[in-house]
Structures are given as structure tokens and as C-alpha cells.
Amino acid sequence: MRDISFDAIAEAVRDLCIEANCALPDDLKCAISAARSAERSPVGQSILGDLVENFTFAGERRLPICQDTGMAVVFVELGQEVHITGGLLRDAVNLGVARGYTEGFLRKSVVRDPIRRVNTDDNTPAVLHLSLVEGDQLTITVAPKGFGSENMTSLHMLKPSVTQEVIEDTIVRAVSEAGSNPCPPVVVGVGLGGDAELAAILAKRALLRPVDAHNSDPFYAEMEARILEKINRLGIGPQGLGGTTTALAVAINPYPTHIAGLPCCVNLGCHVTRHASKTL
Ligand code: SF4
Image (cartoon, rainbow, N blue to C red; front, side, top):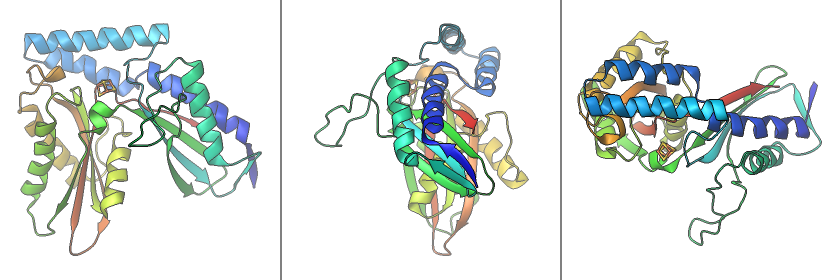
């Protein structure tokens, strides 16, 4: 067994909250820059130029890329040979989020109760997804999620007999109906299969895939390319003001499912699809 301390986890989460909010992953920065050159609408080009200027300025000054610094979604891959000393994993993650959002001067956007809505004042609790994996390491990914895009999530419990075209059109329609709300250009995460709640997690996880990576399964890689093309023909464009760049990437995360169903969850990441990782 290898010991990893509560304090080391809290510190890593603190740093990742700040890092993720101030610096976009390189693949996303490149995709937005490339889209600016390819965009056909002058207004769209101008908006993409503003987005490039914004993330460049934020990175240089260590400022948040967007005013909505999100709910802290934290994925932890815990090696089964790791022993956490000094406290509970969940408490360490929440302490790290509280410190990151407070010391990094990030907006606190979490309310203690969904109806009574009093702010917790430190952006806790995080949404924690824990996976037990092989080995003696612990990998943390912090993916702050703004709710302009999260509110556009949709779950479709499709019939297992639907054609592939119906599945693709369902995904395209979800983006079309979201319109400008998720601050396009978006990254489209799709969870396909499993059950209802797993499809939602698969879709969220799909947003972590580098936007320049292709699905490892050629069948899904082709499907992603077709859907991306259909979405970019919708004309929604950057920030919804028209253009040929509505989505930067489509990532499908498939999983085995029941013979009687076909869950399909679409989770949209905005042009600030942030995430940062560290392995301890
Ligand atoms: S959807 Fe994204 S870009 Fe739009 S306000 Fe929310 S975090 Fe910011």
C-alpha cells in the first residue's frame, strides 16, 4: 500500500480549481483559434477573435476565463493500493474546493439546498465521481461546470429499435434546441448506453476528451464526424449570432445497455470547457 495524505489531496484540488478556471486546455485553445480562421461569418470570426483574446488575457493574468466559475465537478481515480491518511477523501476534496475558490477569488455559485437557495460561500460541496482503479496512484481531474451549458443537458430514453440516423438527429436536435444558451461554440458530450444515470455520467466524462482526439472505435469516430458536420450546418454560430462554427467537437462515450433500451444523454460544454488534472 502507498500512503497519500489528506493534505496533499486538498492542496492538489485547490491548485486544480484555480488552474482549470484560468487556463484552457491547449487542445481547446487550438480548436478555437483554428475555428476563427475557418469561420465564414464575419461576426462569427470577430467573436472567435474575442474568445481567443479573452482566454489569452486570462491565462497571462491568472484570471478566470468566465465570470461563471462553475460547480466543481471532480473525478477521482483511486488506485486500490492507495491508503489515504489523515481524513476522508470527500472531506479533502471539499476542503480543496473551498480553498481554491476562496484563495483564487473565484465566484462561489453553490447553494446549500435546491429550494431554499442560501449560498454556501465557498463553492462546496463538489460533485465527486470516484472510480477504483489498479495501482498505487490517485488521479484528480477538476472540471468546473457553468450552468449556462449544464442547464441544456438532455436525457433521451430511446427505443432500442431506432435507426442510427434517429440517434444522430436526437443529438443534433439537442444542440439546436439549446441555441445560444450554452455559449457556443460548444463541445458535445454524449453518453450512449448504460442506464439513465450512467448515461449522464458518460456524457459528462466525454467532455474531458481532448477535442482533437478521435474516438478509438472507427464506427463511433465516423458517427461523431457526421454529427459534427450536421451541427455546424445549423447556423447557430459563435455565441448564437450566426456562423459555421457551432460545435468544436462531438465525443461519444458508449457502454453496454439493456436489450429493451437505449439511453442517450447529451451534455454540452461551452467554449470554456475547462478541466485540469494531477496525479499523486
Ligand atoms: S456557459 Fe460557459 S461561457 Fe457561458 S457563462 Fe457559463 S461558464 Fe461562462
